[in-house]
Every structure is written in C-alpha cells, then in structure tokens.
Amino acid sequence: MKKIICLLFMLALISQSNAQLRFDSSKGTLGSLEMPNGEKVSFTAYEKLYYVTNVEDSTYQYLNVYIPQGATQQSPIFLRTYVGGYMSSPASSPRASDATGRALKEGFVVVLPGTRGRNATIVADKAYQKAHKGVTRGETFYTGKAPAAILDLKAAIRYLRFFDKEMLGDAEHIITDGTSAGGALSSLMGATGNNPAYEPLLKAMGAADTKDNVFAAVCYCPIIDLEHADMAYEWLFNGTDSRQKGDANILTISNELKTLFPAYLNSLKLKTPEGKPLTDTNYLDYIKSELIRSAQIAKNAGATIPDSLGFVFNQESGFGAPPINGIKPDGAKIKVMNIPNSRMPQAPRGGGRQGEYIIDLDMQKYLNYVVSTQPLKTAPAFDTQGVEGQRASGENDEFGNQKEKEVNYTAFSASKTGAILSAELLKNVYLMNPMNFIEDPQTDVAPHWYIRHGARDRDTAFPVPVNLALKLQNTGKDVNFLLAWNRPHSGDYALDELFEWIKKILQ
Ligand code: DHB
Image 1: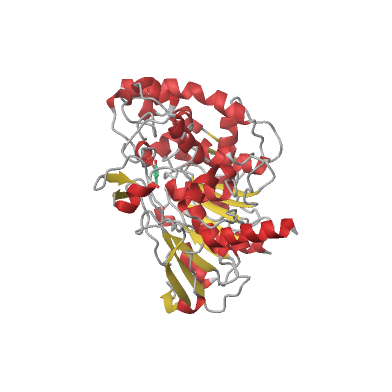
Image 2: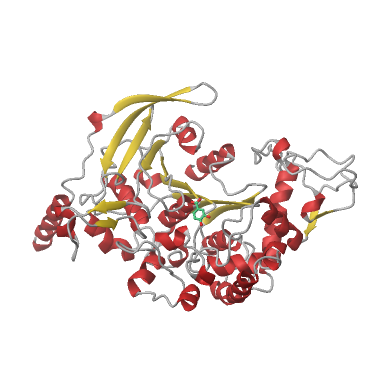
C-alpha cells in the first residue's frame, strides 16, 4: 500500500512538472504540399508546440508536426533537423524537394523541431536573471552553445513520446535525419538514447520526464568526433600536394596532428564487418576498399569512372559479358545514382578499354583529386582558433559559453595557444560526440543506422564516418554505410534508396 501511495505521489509530481507541455489534437490546421511530379499530399499541421516548460528561447524551442491524410497511431515518425554549421535552426515545414516531402508522401508523420545554435542570443530579462546566477539584466548572452542543440532535440523526442497516445504516429518508431552538423545531431539522437549524462540538463529545461531513444538514425556527412577530427584530417590529407606544397607552418601542424591519429584509431579496437581487426597498419587499405566498393556500385549503375582518379581496372574487357551494368547480383535494378552523367567526371579520351571490375586504387592520386574539387581546410581543420594565428572556426564558436563567443577545445590546440580547457568545457565536448556513448551500457542506441558520406567530401576526413559506422556495426547494430560515389558535402540524396531501406527496417 505504501508503495502504491508513493508511486501515485511520484506520478502526481511528474504530471505537475509537465503541466505546461501541451498538445491538443483538435487544434490542427489543414494544408498540402505539391510534390515535384504535381502530386498533392494533404496533411494536418500542428505548429509551435513548445517542447520544454522552461522556454529560454521562444524563437527556437518548439516543434512543428505534419500528419498526412490516412496516418494512424502506427505510422512511423520522420524527424528531420535542418541544423547546418551548428547554427540556430527554426522549426520549419516539409519541403517537396527533400526527405521531409518524401516522408509525408510515404505516409510518415513529419516532425520538424527548432533548435538553439551557436549564434542564438538573448538579452537577459527578469526571468532569465532568476534562472541564471550572476546575470545583469539587459546583458546579452549566448543561449545555444554546446550541448544546447542536442538537448533541444532530445526534449523534442521526449515531447513526442509524452503525447504519443494523443498524437497520430508511433513514438517507438522515430527515424531521425540530418546533414553535416545536422548529421552529427542525428547521430547523437541515435547514439545517446536515455543516457543519464543529459538528464540533469534536460530536467532543468523542463523536458518531459520520459525516454528519448529513437528507432533509426539517418546521418549524411556527420561532422562528429571533434576531439579527434583534426588528427584524422591530417592523417588522411597530409600527403596531398595541397598540404605538401602549401604554407610551411600549416604543414608543420599537419605533420604533428597526423602522428596522433594511429594511437587513437588503435584505441577504438575496430573490426571490419567481416570481423578482421583494423589497426593503423591496414586501415588505409580498408578505406581504399570502401572507395572501390562505392565506385564499383556506381559503375555497375552506369557511371563512368575516369582512370585519371587513380582506379585500376581488370584487363578483361566487359565485351560480350552478361549485362551486369545497372543490375545488382540479385537481379534488382540499382538506383544509387541520382547524378546526371553530364555532371560526373568524364573519362579521358584515348584511354584503353576498361574492364568491368575495379581492382585497385592509388590513394594519393584519389585524395589529390578530392582536394582538387574543393580546397582543403587549414590545419587544424576544426579547432583552429589561434593556432598559427588563425581565425576561429564554427566549432570554436560552438564550444563557447554564455559569454565567450569562441574557445579552443582540444588538448592539441590548447597546447599551442595556452588556452585552459575547463572541466565544464570538456564535459560539453563529451556530450556532443556520439562515439562516447555507443558502448556505454546506460545508453539505448538506435538499432538501425543509415550513414552516408560523399566520396569527394572533404569537410571532415573519411575515418570520421567510417569509425562511426564500424563502432556501431561492431556492437551489433544494423548499419547501412556508404562513401557515396561522387557526392560532395551534401545530404538527403538517393531518396528512393533511403526509403526502400526505411521500409525494410520497419517490416
Ligand atoms: C558544417 C560543415 C563543416 O565543414 C563544419 O566544420 C561544420 C558544419 C555544416 O555544413 O553543417
């Protein structure tokens, strides 16, 4: 009896603390979206749903929900974050041209949360003063520095679970999606479900007292592992002509950073999907095999792979061979390529006939090609501020605090600039890296992952998404990973393929 009274009391407290979270299913408005083929998708919209009770920034801390006609309690929920560059991102509406329009057309409930970002500010009023110590009224404060964006998204997920019965759509089947910094946030939503490290922060915001794990994470070119992204970048790109023939001081930094990567890589104890241990001695070969796999898929689908990029083909010509191009081994048509052939790099004229199969790749040649399509970032690529007198990066800005716009956040850059890395800063860096949570037994990691990074994306180095995919795969998650052929830093592409995958994991 005592236990029951205690439980009722706790339930009363919980419902009281969430008293201001609201959802009224009778308050929707009708709307429609015209798809590129002219088809009209009708929906009911619920907008400006605040997902925390202690709203600090009313411009961003709410979400919009779009429920297509015919949706049920069982319909999956597609949650897309439009965060780019770790900037603030207002809640928006579905777009016919990207995955949100497509999700709506497929009958999914679409959720578009706003989030605070590194550029969000607030002028302290009475309420802000009350909630924060040592604040003078009228002063300007940053509200969206790390880890604000992931806290907002977790609060949004909790809101959907809290109102799961009242709202159509199934909060146990949330699929997150984002690109670049948004891809990082999608991977964080997938990798940090219910981890207690975020709990006190979410509680202080007035997030619903419920779970925040998700079913699947779709991550395009996630800019993650910022503690190690600088070393990974130089490990991969140090040998390119661009680094070797560039600024001598930057090359010195690059040489130093590159030597730090092997120890980190080896500490991850990664294995190939086939179970073969990966260390710094065979890791470049693994990346090479992933690039070859990507180019071969594209070639099979009819793309021209120029010899000039460094690929080596088998000598037997495809002449007279079965028509494998564009056909998967199981006979299904491949729909990987959405790039018109006119935009693909063209093969040099006068070359010999290519065989059907790519058998090798000259990595230095290929990396020089990648860097020729877009100049390399400087070194360090991310924690830049003050190293060799350089300007701050977006990441330096992301790890600032209420008053400090930009800060260093890695031991390497701090050793160059004399910056102090406070315990609070290091905690925020920790909370922004999905790699820290995948093996944490206190996390409910999403069981399904779709990770894409363009085969000519140089915004972060290939090891960053490759390590994410392998760590997830090695811990038993279902991972669909590809260094997507000829893609630059971009997202929401090959949507036929993406939604085919989503339908498969929902079966
Ligand atoms: C993004 C791109 C970057 O190169 C980066 O360092 C951080 C974010 C982006 O496009 O979101």
